[in-house]
Amino acid sequence: MIFITIDRSQSISLTQQIYDQVRNGILEKQLKEGEKLPSSRELAGTIGVSRNIVLEAYERLIAEGYLEVRPKAGTFVALGTSLSFVERPMRKDTPKKAEDEKKTYIDFKAGNPAIDYFPRKKWAQITKEICLHSSESVFGYGEAAGMKELKDALVDYLKRVRGVQCRAEQIFITSGATQGLKLITEMLGKDNKSIAVEDPVTDEMRNIFTFSNAKIIPVPVDENGINPNSLPEQSPSFVFVIPSHQFPLGGILSIQRRLQLIEYAKRMNCYIVEDDYDSEFTYEGAPVPSIQGIAPNHVIYVGTFSKILSPGLRIGYVILPEELVDSFEQIKWFSDRHTSSLEQLVLAQFIREGYLDRHVRKMKKIYKEKRERLVSAIQQNFQGATIIGKSAGMHLVVEIPGVDFCPTFIHKMEHSGVKVYPIEQYSLVKGKHRERIVMGYGGLTLEEIEKGVLLLRKTIESNRKSIF
Image (cartoon, rainbow, N blue to C red; front, side, top):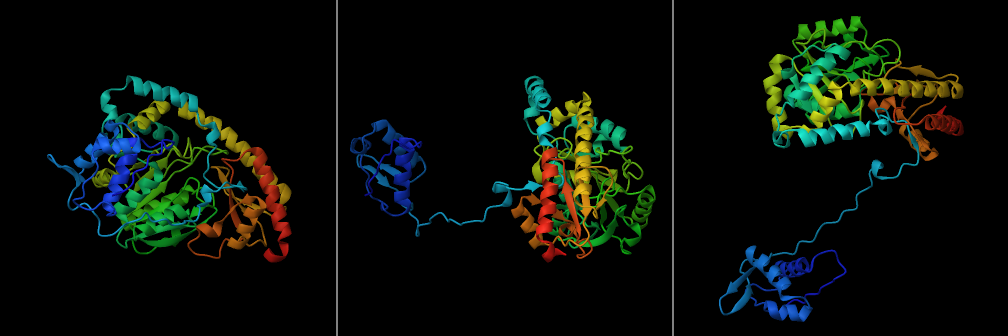
């Protein structure tokens, strides 16, 4: 026999409280198999609830097999319902992730867009229209490759702004560029196949490649992008490049190097994977067109709206050569069935009606002002510093002679109120970029930028003996 108690101050219903206590009593052998339970009327009177509440709890336990009713005898604990051991929930104290803790520093993280400028009002308006006026099929399962409306909009948009050549059937909508690159690697680079990768490169990409057990071949990058003369002599499954604004060094790949890269891919019978994550934001001259537009049969083009609009909008896309479409479609279907149809339709209308173009024009002005403020602050506070990277994107690279941005010093800076990111963190071959840091400015205010640079200078000066 167990004692059942009722706590009316809890948010859990009385029926659920009775059910839980009887069920746990059976599993933990406080109530033995074959033991008779009090009648519903008796139990209700004992604990001070209505009989219907007890009946509801008993009926659920009977339906699930914990209890059985014997005619003219009563309600009993069913046979085979107790565990041979008592299992308690495991509690493990896990360290808090950095993002879970309240930030007490100015974070110069690259790739963080100014989400406070996200066009909420227009996005909400279009979303409402789509929900109210779309056919019922939109709320069902969609195609793994993505909605035709968005793919058609992308064909026109990417041809106009990036020089991409493709048909809608070659486009696959993904949950951000990350999923796209993961699926490409799964299709081409798994099982110890080699991938030629820019060095340095974002750690996110490096982790995707290594997770698939691919062999990474680092290819040196300078201020002008990847050096084709350093590509491996044996054919890799693909070459991963960020030609329009290399991350982290910020270089833009010249047309000469682009052509060399294409010739290499043709000669080696491999593919170029072109990550085009923030090419819309170029502040001096026009953006350089994509490599895909020159060699669509040898280039897999990857893009995302995380940097243009918001990371919360998990929509990216992959554009494939015709011969890879069927293979990729199968992998995409097994990955997540399809990307949110409603968000795809909202984005399609957002593009068709010109709102994306307007948003990009607006953000270019905002990011350009932030970049200029950051450049000015660096020049004022660090006379010997060199700024690396073209006037594009949402980050730049700063080289401060004599300063070793090792993990210990980075940790000290966080405690001083500023966080920057050493290039060494992204390097495959270590030791070449100790004096260089990445400073992103997209998600910071002008005041935070100036204050952050000042804190950086003060921290360096206060630790001069240990870092020079």
